[in-house]
Image (cartoon, rainbow over all chains, first blue to last red; front, side, top):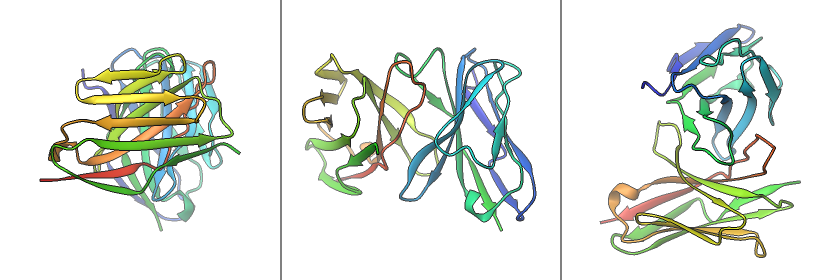
Length: 114
Length: 112
């Protein structure tokens, strides 16, 4: 198993540009989520999904969209990038849910918005 | 508002000693708590999950306690090694609420 994969590893955007961060898992996990990590702020949940076709907002959803058309993929879209979205983004997945199961994280995408 | 505090930003421990990390939470009654390890430039790695009805949980040299009265979880690494140097994150959660909130982490350095 490749586990949780994220692309790209690094990205530089200009303010106002849009892009999609890709996340895929090959473990047949139902639960997937996106976090951002900023110095001194810890990991903050952006959006999550408990299965294909089901998504919900986390703590900091503004400026981001998600969709879950398949079990394997959970892309994160930045609609109009802003410098405040400069961060490291992590995707995570687990088989069923958080309270009984290990959550696996991807290697992260480091995004800089100029 | 809900708040999670991990005892300090950085902790230096001599090799072979026990490292103890603290996770305190306020305005919270979590049903479980997870601990993760994160190395620089990498994603967090799940270590242990402890539920509110479990006072203690062990995995090899790791031990986690969960005191719902004190609103605190302690994470112990016994016989610490330089390879244990990393940032450790705690994350309390609720059943039926698929949202984890993470603490900011404690950067542990084991000194040879």
